[in-house]
Amino acid sequence: MSPFSAVLRKDLLLEVRGGQSTVALGALSLLVLVVLVFAFNPGGGEQGAEAAAGALWVALVFSGMLGATRAVSAENENGCMRALLMSPLDRAALYAAKLAAAFIFMGIAEAASIILMVLFFNLEFDARVMRLVPAVLLGALGFAALATLLAAISSRLRGGDLVLPLLAVPMFVPALIAGVKASAAALAGAPLAGSAVWLKVLVAFDVMFVAAGYLLFEYVAGEE
Amino acid sequence: MTAALIETRVLGKSFGPTPILRDVNLSVEAGHGAAVVGANGAGKSTLIRLLAGLSAPSLGAAMLFGEPARSLRPELRRRVGLLSHQSFLYPNLTARENLEFYATLYGVDDARATAIEWLERVALGAVADSRVHGFSRGMEQRLALARAMLVRPDVLMLDEPFAALDADGAALATELVRDAMDRGCAVLASAHSASALAELGFAILTLSRGRLVRAEPSTTRSAARPPLARQQVS
Image 1 (cartoon, rainbow over the protein chains, first blue to last red):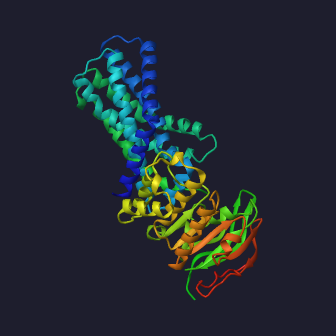
Image 2 (image 1 turned 30 degrees about the vertical axis):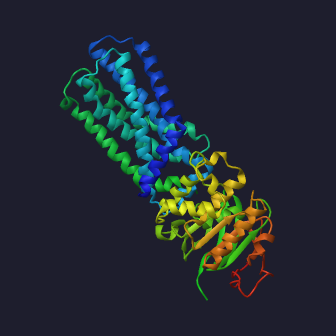
Image 3 (image 1 turned 90 degrees about the vertical axis):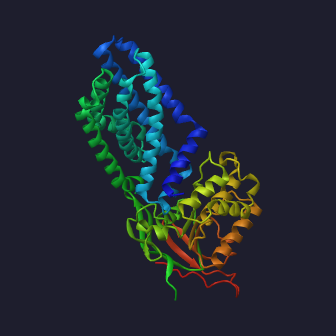
């Protein structure tokens, strides 16, 4: 088994045994969707699609922060991050494993969010929901990449829990806008090609922040 | 004279304006051991953290295998073992899973067999499949020692190795350290008291307010013991 696989397997095993992140992410997604469906009281059509897309992406952002924080903070128990940094494990591979774990946690939460969104916003499980998936996956990947890097920085700071959302949310705004637009178009019945420009923005965001995390993680994860 | 595996040169560390370590020079060769003793806050743990590459020196150098510890190549990091204040163990993994995980990270062949072997060596075989969060402090310390040593390191750093260990645990730790030194491992340990480490033939270096103020050769040398660690006190 490769070190990357060992770290990822360990994180997933800890999550299955602890179950804290997935349950919390699911509950948070449910809460966000319930509040927003009553706040917007959407009708059908394009307005309803936009409201549903917006609610879905708010749930993604909140669950993403929780998932990425959990993936990194699990190493703070008993100083395990120090042990990982001391080991022969390549630090870029460590980042990749943490990113993969955060992405998986977010993916599970997003799957639940999509189901809840369809139910609460009176949508149908049809091709429109399937056209939603590329934007959601790209958004989850980009946010996981960003939040994992920022979580490593904030875990070393006093008041780091405040720093992560203060940094992550503004930096994610371009991808958030693109994701909401692409999702709204998909839910309104537009073909995938109609969302191409927004999907390209998401891809560019993903490339930028995955690369940034890959290059910078070893510098932010170590001690002074 | 063989090259030092553990070495510091004019090593200093400050946190802001506060100096923690000043002008520390020491070296430990293969098969030798040195114990750094001192009161709380003397800088013992900071010294070990610098040599483990977990923190950057403010001045001078902390070196392992002749290279800066902070930027050690992966193939050299594979040869270093550290027992820290923190156990480096995942509470929700079992004892065996913890050791298997680290064995895999360090590229040990047959991680599972190695984990089981070391659990037996530290007398934790009966609780191999128990989660660490249920362990006593002494059991955690034994497991942490196994974690540090299962890679058969050439450099071993031990931060208060006998903490929380009962008499049997301390005897076990002593035996494991002696075995490591016999196969050529360089060992640097920190402790409040030098007595247990002096038995192992360690040189005793006294740290006070960040400075090495005294160096004592061991008085318990035997023909079977390797020569003492070389040390310089500025």
